[in-house]
Image 1 (tube, rainbow, N blue to C red):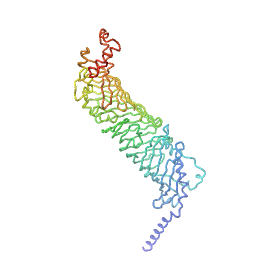
Image 2 (cartoon, one colour):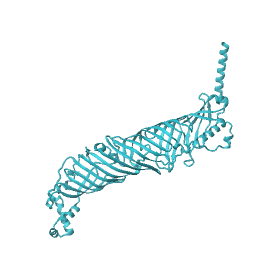
Image 3 (cartoon, rainbow, N blue to C red):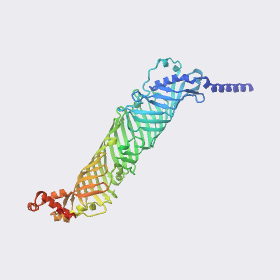
Image 4 (tube, rainbow, N blue to C red):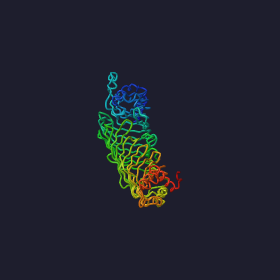
Length: 547
C-alpha cells in the first residue's frame, strides 16, 4: 500500500509539474495566425490579436489586444477595440492532440462603434454573413486546419457602445458598462442572449431574448424574440433628442419585440416623467404614459404606429400614423384624437407644450376634444386641426375687468372667475408660432367672442376679435344702439397678461354706416365724420377729444 501511495504521489507531482511547465513549453503565439484567420472568416471582418498567453488553469489563451475592422464604406477606424480577448478551450484535446476546441470568447472592456448610413444601413449588418477570402498563408497553415470553433459562450464585459450616424452633427447614443452574453453560438441556430448597460447621460437598459439563425443578407434581418426594459433614460442628455428641438424628459420602457426577419413588431408601454414637448416648454409635473404597438419594416427602415393610447391621468387620446427615416431626421405623419378628456388632467401638460394661461388662473372642470394632424421631422413638427373646450371655468381671471373699456361701451358683469360654455377653433402650430382661426368663445356672463389671431413662440398675442354682447351699455345706447351689441376689439400683450383694446377705427367706421344721411352731412361727411365719431368715443372713454 505504501508503494502504491508513493507511485500516486509521484504521478500527481509529475502531473502538476507538467501542468505548471506547459505555459513555458508551449508558445501560444503559434496559434495567433490560426485564431486571426478563423475569427476573420467567422465575422467577415479582419481580426487582429496582440500577444497571446496560455493559461493552463483557466484552460484558455488570452490576447493582450483585439481589433476588428469596420466595413470600409463606414469607417477606416476599427469596429471593435478591446483591452483583451480570452479564448477558453477544452484542455486535454489541446495538450495531447494540439486541437483547439474553442468553448468561449470573453472580450474585456471593448469599445464598439455602431454607425448607420443615410440610406439606413448599419455597419454591423453583414457581420458574420459572409467570410473574406482565405489567403495562401492562412490556407497553408496546417495548425489552422485543426481548429474546431464551437463556441458555447461569447461574453462582453465592461464594454462601451456608441450608436451614431455617418457624417452626423448629432450626439451619438453611448452605452457604458455593457455586459453581454450570447450562448451556443452558431450561425445556423437560435441563440439566447442578454445585455445590460448604463446610458451615458442617465438611464439603464436591459435586453434579453433569442436570435437566429443569422440571415444570409445581414444581421439586422435575423429573426428575434426578446424583451426590453429601459429605466429613466434622459432624452436630451443621452443624445436621443437634440436640445434645440425642445423635446425632453425621462423615459422608461417595458416592451417586447418579435422579428420574422423582414418585419419587427414591438409592443409595450412608455412612461414619461418631466416631459417637454416644445421649445420653451417646461417639464410637466404629471407622468404621461403611452401604450403602443409598432410594425417596423427592417428593409425600409420605416414603419407604422398601429396602436397608440396616450394616458394623462384619466384623460385618454389616440395617436396613430407612420414614420420613416430621412437623412438624420425621423419624419412623422400621425393623427391625434381625443374626445371627452377631463380638462384638469390636461392642464398639467400645458407647460410642456409651452402654453401659458393668464397669470394666476387655472382651469376647473369641463372636457376637451381634439382632432389634430401631426407632421414633419421630430425636431420640427407642425400640428393642424381643431380644438374645443366645453363647460369649463377659468378661475382667477375676470374677463369682464380685463375688457373694462368695452364694458363701458356695453356693460359687462364682473366676476372673479370666467365661466366658459364653449371655446373652439382651428389651430396651426409650428416652432415659431401658433395661429387660431374661426375662434369662438361663449361666456354666458359676457356674450360670444369670435375672431382669429397668432400667438408667437414668446407668447405675444395679436388677435382681431369681435364680441357680441348680450346687453347694451350706456355709451352704445347714447350712440343709438338698442338690444344686443357687436363690438370689434383687439387682444394684445402676452398669454400671461393679455390686453384687450376696442378697435376704435372699426367702431367709428361701423357707427358712421349707422348714422342717417342728415347726421353725416352735419358732421361734414367722409373722414371728418369718422374723426368726429372717434373723438366722441375718446371723450366718452375718458380720453381727450382731438381738436
